[in-house]
Length: 251
Ligand SMILES: [Zn+2]
Image (cartoon, rainbow, N blue to C red; front, side):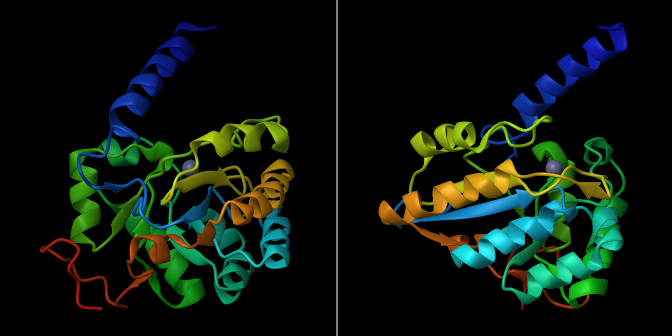
């Protein structure tokens, strides 16, 4: 391993520990819903991609499950038809930044990575997302402030299986990771694609969803979108006026 690779790994581990859920977020994160209602949310990051996101949408459609997709703006521009399909089929579209750079949120000044993806999504579905998930979950206090000023809610997770790994981890292993952690209000982070890949083959996440869904239902859980889980709007008002009073936006 080169020195540069080793340093990057250490920095990434420190960043994950300090800035990502479950410990990071500086008070901006929603990492789960109420622990009093037997409901959980499936969330999928890093898409859309083809054919992976389309196949996942097929699976969700067959199961009658609505999910929340945190989309990368560049991929939205590549595959607007997939985003439109997800939206039309009742899934919620959230913002996962324009290029999936974990460095953009570290800079003291900026916000273009948020706004460009916001515009890309709005151009496809006609409304601006209310939910944002930072790439890698890295959230600095100033990035949290930028998101709050724009009227965003920042969404973390409390369950994060290894479905981001390449090559893929078998669905049975993913399910075994997830099951013991499920609680009322859980937000499960999975991945419909790999960021900044125009085409991607991915089967195990959809298989895991196919295995998990009947189990969750047999345990009395509803599977809902993040806005439903948290009681939040899915989309902001059409103008991007800075909101300086926190989340209490007039919708
Ligand atoms: Zn991501």
